[in-house]
Length: 531
Image 1 (cartoon, rainbow, N blue to C red):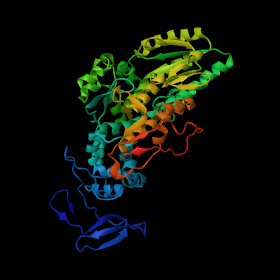
Image 2: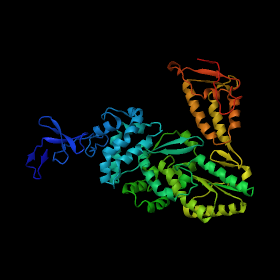
Image 3: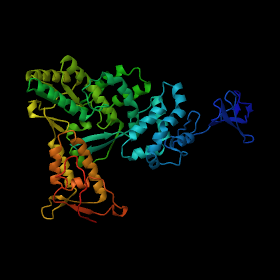
Image 4: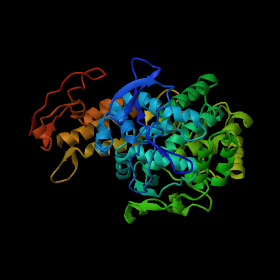
C-alpha cells in the first residue's frame, strides 16, 4: 500500500516481491499476487512493491527491530534452522555445531548488503562473531542465559547503542577467587563481554605491530608456556657463552589497581583516531570513570572478602586509578600501559634478553653490575612516566640458583615444576582418597568416589599434566604414581552404566601397575572395585 504526500490518495498494489530468490534464473525473483494468491517470477527491474514486515519486539525496552528487508523470523530460521521463538538458550547450546556451519553463509547473506553500505556503523556480523567468542568454552551464567534467550534482539540492542554512542558498562559482578591466591574479580555483564570481544580485535590490529616480541601475556600465539620456553633459551645462551650469568626479576606492586586511567587513555587515543567512532566511544566509556561508578553486585561473603588484602581491593585504589581484573579489555589495556616500559628496556637500555608476562618481567645478563644499573633506571622510569612502583624484595641472583617464573623453576640445564603447584595438586588428589577413621589422614593408595567425581578427577589431572609436560616430568610422574597407585588406572576414561552414576565405588591398589612400564604409560590395570 502506498500513500501520497498529501495523504488524500491511496493506491493499492497487488504484486509484491517475495524474499525467495529464483534458483533457475538469477535475473528474476519471485513475487506474490495478493488479489488471487498466485506466485510468479518476474525480472528484477520490474516496479513491484515490497511489503513491510514487523519484526519481534524486545520486552525489556520495547524496541522494534527492522532487519534490513528481512524479518527476525527469517534470520533466525536461516541461522539455527527453525523459526524464532521456538528455540531456547538450552537449544542454542545444543546447536553449537549447526550455528558454526551456518554462521558464515547466513550472516553474509543477511548482513553484508547493509554493512557495505553503512561502513561507518557497527557491523552486525562483527557483533555476531563477538557473541560467539564470548560464549566459547564458558560455563553459562545467569545473565548469559538471559541474553541468549533473545540473542538476536539483544545483538541489535547493542548495535543501536554503539551506533548512537549511548553504550555504557553495566554493573559488575564481584567475587573472590582463592586459587592460587585470594584476589577480587570484577566480572562484566555478558552483554558487556560481547562488546569487549568486539572491541579488542580492533585494538589488537592497531597495537600488535607496536608491541615487542618478548611480551607474552594475553596475545595470540604467546602465553605462559611460550614465555617459559623463551626464557629457558636465554638462560642457556648466557650459560653456554662465558658461563655464570645473573638474572634480575622484577614485579610491579599492585599493578591493576595502580594503573592511572587518564594516562592509559593518553596512550591509546592518538592511535585509534582512524577506528570507527563507536570503538572510540567504548574505550572512552571504559576508562573515563571508575568501574565502581557503574555499580557492583557483590556475590561473596564478608569472610571471603576478608581474605583479600585491603590494597588488593579495587575499592581501595587511588583516585583515578584502577581497572577491573576479569575483563578481556583490562588484559589488553595492561599490555598497552606497559608498552612504554618495554620500549624503554629494549631500545634505551639495549637489553637483549628481556621477557615480560603482565607485570612480572625478567632481565638476563652476564654482568651483575649492569643489572644493578638497569634496576635503578627501570624503577625511576616507572615512577616518572607510569606512576608505578616495584614490589619488594628485588631478586638479583646467579642463574645457577634457579629462576621461579610462571609456575616453573628454570635452570640453564633443565626445568622443574614449582613446588607450590605440586602442593596444590596433592591437596586436590587427597580429597579423593579414603580417610583413616582414627587419624583422619588420607590413605593415598585407596580411591573412593562416584563416577561423577571420577570425571572431575580426570579433568584436574589433565590440566596438571598440561602444565607438567613443559618441564622435566619423568621422575615427577613416577613419584606421584608411587604416592597414588590408583592415579594412572583411573586417569583413563571409563564408562559406567547410567544407573551407577550416583553410586560410590572404591579402588584399592598397594602399588601402581604402571611403575614397571616405560613412559608414556600404556596398558590396562586390574583392580577390585565394588559398587
